[in-house]
Length: 461
Image (cartoon, rainbow, N blue to C red; front, side, top):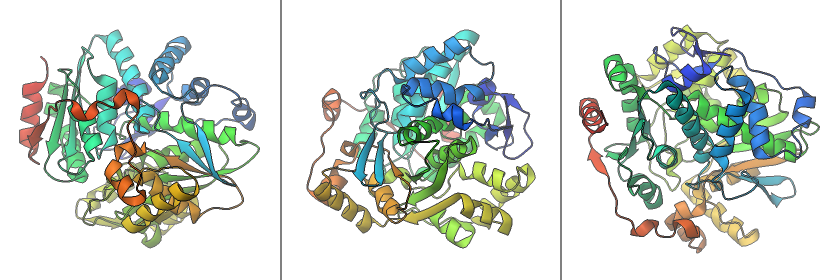
C-alpha cells in the first residue's frame, strides 16, 4: 500500500512514513494510491463482531507491512481499552428511521478520541522500534487538541505543542488542554481564529529546515491515519442496521471535512451508503460551495459549536483530488487560488461532488431550538455540534435509516446547552474535578517566527 500527495509532486510513501510525515513536502495531503474494496460477503462477515475486530478488518488493507497482524491487533486493543462503553460507538434510536451514533465515550468525550487514541499507539509503536524522537505540533478548534494531549502525554519520545484560538473554545475544551501536568505537553493559546492556527501549522511544515530540525510530525486531520481510524465507525454502525443488505445514510457535523471524508472512503470501499450529508453551522463554507460551486472564504463568526468555526476545510482538498481525476497539478492550482480568497470548481468535478454529497446548515437559533426540542421530545440532551447535524438530518430523512454522528458529550458545552434547554449537563464522575485543576497555558501571537522559536526553546533536546 502506497500513499501519494494530492498535489502530485511529492514521492510516494508507505503507510508508516506517510503517518509520521503528516503533510507532504509539496504541501499536499497523503491519500492511498488505491482504495481497497470489501465485498458484500466481507461486510456481512462483520456482523456480530466487536468494534476492535471490525477496526482490524477495515483498516488492515491500508497499513501494508508496517505492522504484523498481531502487532496491529494489540495496537487497536490498547487504543480503545479506555473507552467507557463496551460498544465503543453505540447507536441510539431517535425516531423510526433516525439514529444517533454516539462517538463521545472516549477519554476526552469527543469523536476525535477514536482517531487520536489509535494514532498515539501507532506513533508509540513506530518510535519505540526506531528509537527516534518527534515534535508534534497540532492546531485545534476545540477537540483535536485535548484528544492529542491525552494520547501523547507522558511519552518519553514525543513533545506535543497544541495551538488553539484564544477565547474561541469552550471552557471545558480549554481546561482539557491546559490542566495536564506532564512536561512534554504545551498548550498554546494563539491570537486569531482556528484558520490562523491551521495556517501557522502548515507554515511550519513548509519550512523544511525547521521541519527537519525539530523532527516535526502532525496529528491533525491532515494525517491520513486520523481519517482511516474514522472510517471504522461507518462500517460498525451500518452493519448494525443491516448493511450490506440494506442501504444507510449519514449526516455529519463538519468543519474541516475529515469526518465526512472518512464516510466517503467507506463508500468507496463498498459500504452501501445512499447519502453523505454535510451539516454546517453559520460558518457554512462547505454548504455554500456545494450550492454555488465557489469555494470563497468569509469571516469566521464564533458560534456555540466552535469545533465547526472554520473557513478553510483542509480535508476538502482530498475530495477535490478525486473529483479532478486525481490530477495533482489541478489541485495545486486551486490551493494557490485559495491564498487569494477562493476558487471556482469546474463543472465536472462540481457535479461529482453534488452526486456524492448533499448539505445543509443550521443557524445559532436553529441549533438552540433543536437542542430544546430534542430534550423535550426524546429526553436526549445534545451538544451544539450534534444539534446542528440533527437539524440538517431531519431535512434529509428518507426511506433508508439515517445515522447522525453525535460528536461530543453535551457537558463539553454546558453554557450553550443550558441556555437552549434549561438542563445543565454534568461531566462524568471521572472528570468532575476538571474545573478545580490549575491551568498551564502560554498566550502566543499569530507570528510564525515567534511560534517556531518557542517550539525550539521548549522541546526536550
